[in-house]
Length: 216
Image (cartoon, rainbow, N blue to C red; front, side, top):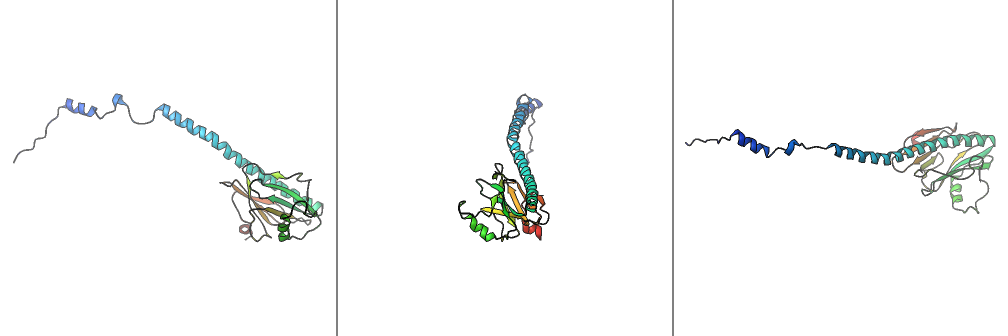
């Protein structure tokens, strides 16, 4: 039987063969300092563009909800002191979301269906029962750019309202409609104002909440 002989390679030849697979000049794979600096610069530029927008929207929604907290208290107090029925009017138009306060003398019975019919008439045809209250809102106020009204719900509504004109009523006795008002950027931010009908105070939820969920 023939003997298998393993050829021997001299150390010099083996070393020469190994050098063919080694990086030239001892270089290793990886990022150079310049490449790392370029990547960090790109990340920094992206953050400098995106983060201010995020913080601006967050600050805007905080400011708007706080202003609604104050406005709710003012409307309730004015309804009591003037023996009037007041209502917070919310225009849910996504192109131009606005809000203002209206006033009617004395106590008024709520008729949501009649209010919906009144929306269909022109300003000239509307009855003069409700007038813009220039003490609290001298003119219609717009939400900051990028913010919108989400769903608005009161205890007298059959379902949440997401379009048209919505109303939240305040009464001469110091009571108001139980209501929830959502303010959103239509992306990741949605805050909800939840009004207590007995005190007129509002709680803020940093998420989309339904009035039915709260009153269960």
